[in-house]
Image 1 (tube, rainbow over the protein chains, first blue to last red):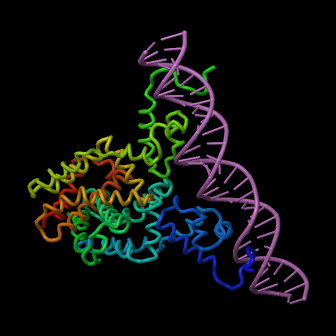
Image 2 (image 1 turned 135 degrees about the horizontal axis):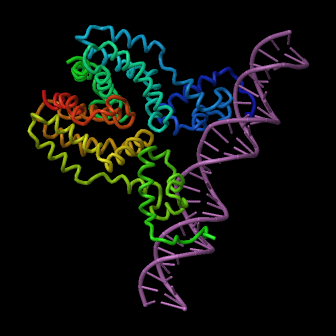
Length: 193
Length: 193
DNA sequence: CGTAGAATTCAACACATGATGAATGCGATT
DNA sequence: AATCGCATTCATCATGTGTTGAATTCTACG
């Protein structure tokens, strides 16, 4: 009789399994609609085990949402680029973030949660504004740099929503190079002209 | 002793009060995070009364989310416009929708709910794709009309998110004319060139 | 071997949710 | 005045949530 309780025989890393399942669940449904019990169900584990490993639901989410730390420095590199192909570089950078499986998951989760969780929305806005658009605006010696950066942000966020969240065709299946081809001039105009 | 139960004295239109409170609640929090009980609390009414008037929560939401029916015909008019200032017209039309208090509420609610509710997301995609971008694409005699319409949609959706949902400055407080000034060329390029 | 501690589940709590059916009060019609 | 129907609340149900504390089983170390 397989015992219903107690420690499991082999050395399978259940903790990591839970993390993985939680990651996909959060990225597919957002924070609110993802229940600890659903995560536990996916990992074939008791809900209490999730709590046991990661504390509260908030802490679990925070553990998962660690975006790459070098993001800021990458943006700085972007800003230092010559202004002629700045638009293209920005688009490529943004697309790289979303095409990468790991970061895409975090981004999806954050975006999905930001709408309903005011706290998440605030931190998202702060992050985008301070860590991404701020540095970019700082290097624009043109009138209204802040506005220009925000406009660029609006096109990029629109791209993310349509291509990765709503998945509207044909943009959702378009190859990366074509996306760059279409969006680069727009970004370039916002960030120059 | 003011009786706790039974009909209320004066002729105040409670039904409409509930509708109004539900509208603001849905637009501020989206479908999921808005509870019938919260709506009832706002209207100072028993939760059962909400159910009594509007049936299920879904039906209440559907009752509120009736976007103006003439939308389709307006888009048709847009499509018929000369191609030279099509970009500007599209931007103006979109902004008019969001600057109008009544439609903004519906749009906010739909957007906020679309992220977490798969059903809402599907119908939003269908609506945008079929009723808005489809007709627009139909009148473009250029290569890849559908892609062009979707690109235009991405910039408009990005604008809505940044300006009306995330409320990121300075775009959030920018006057309408300036928004038109900045976005019209982008839209024009997607829809021509 | 024995035992400390980790992994895991069980059972339960306190709370919130959407929904329903019965009860009660008031207004309007006869 | 009597009555019918609407407006409104009460009490309650079934379900789902995050979280906690105790119990059980296994592993690892002495």
